[in-house]
Amino acid sequence: MTEVFAKQALLPQGWRRNVQITIAADGTFASLTPDSTPGPDMQLLDMVVPPQISLHSHAFQRAMAGLAERRQNPDDTFWTWRTRMYQLAHRISPEQMQDVAAFLYMQMLKAGYTQVAEFHYLHNAVDGRPYTAPAEMSSRVAAAATDAGIGITLLPTLYARGGFDGSPLNDAQKRFASTPDTIVRILSDLQSDWRGSQLVTAGIGLHSLRAVDIHTLGDLLHAAGPAAPIHIHIAEQQREVETCLSVTGQRPVEHLMSHLPVDARWCLVHATHLSAAEVTAIARSEAVAGLCPVTEANLGDGIFPFEAYVAQSGHFGIGSDSNVLLSPWEELRLLEYGLRLQSQKRCVALPRTTRGRSAHGCTARASPGGAGHRPAPQRSATRRPRRSVRPRRTGPVPARSSERRHSRFRHFRHFKSPRPPRHVCRTMAHHRWLPPRRSPPDKGLSCNPAHPDGCLRFSGSEP
Image (cartoon, rainbow, N blue to C red; front, side, top):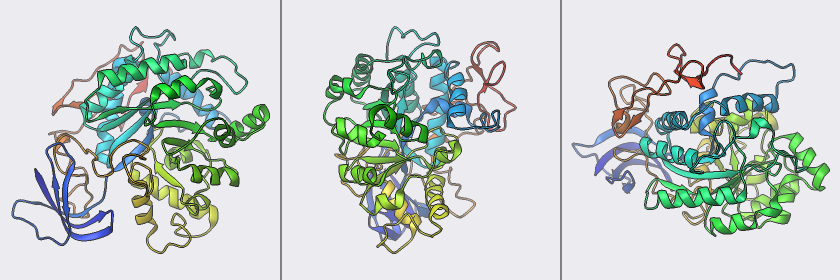
């Protein structure tokens, strides 16, 4: 048991003072006692807030953070960024995937995330052929999460076609190629390999309506089971909405809901460009809107119609998505500030009839797995109990303090070391540093010690 005393703590009932927090050996909260007095051996903190959950992540994209921040096209958009992302995807080996993911998850823990939903579609070898073990890449990601000590909901993701018209995948997408049967096999292997794990659970991902045929998903959804979470990218770009309309006669969310029983286990990621009817439909379905404000701003996606959505008691959560910046607090801040710019009003993220702090409202509503005020775990978007988040194997909860001697990173004992990590390939597993894994200069990715963030870089010419 570890005991921490916080002068202030944000609890489900709101801000409370003089809170004694007892943490069990497995990293879960054993007790929370407000209005208490500190014991002689307790660690003293000014302020403690709940850890957050990233309900949408592409771990491999952390390796390109910062490498797409210069214009190479007069009309630079999401679609030109996607070309660069494809180039990265074709360079990562399974070993490098595990290295990048382990480092990312360690950084997530330091930033205040304790659970991540990994939307994983990098299934095949570089040449597009399946690995002997179809779950090879997914298993690497799961191993990275357990090495770091973060809870993960792994979502092996179906990516079956190149567009709404049923066109085949192009060469740049060959590592993503999968069928419903492939995803069922990967899901089965993950459930078998990680049965009994306290950190690893699994659901399924559907890349997008343009990449899957919703008429062929019956067996896949049945195999996933009635409790498994289902995540899908939807309505992220105007071009996607326009193409869906021209091919199907319906907008994306409208098309999805007219063909599949969307309910509380679904997470609709982005859902940026919605009609008023679609906003209402998502709120009534009790699905979770998976918002990724930093990535959506980075890619120029647009702004989710949040004010209308929360007015109808819609549920939401936040995701780090491309992992270009790791901070749940900046995600929530950008969510609120984007809404202010759009509406020319302040404190917009609160429901219209609610008084109080918008920051408190955002944090409290996004905390329970992105499931708003609904009870957990039955309806949690990431299928984790509300108060059973696991910051790490041992040590106190993530904390933030205004005092210099209490660094926001200090309280992750799992990550204490005499020197900070300098390369993405240098990761910590079970309290020891792993040596960097370097690739030959002409193959794939390599460490770049000169880079200020120590991130991987493309060998040869940059994409």
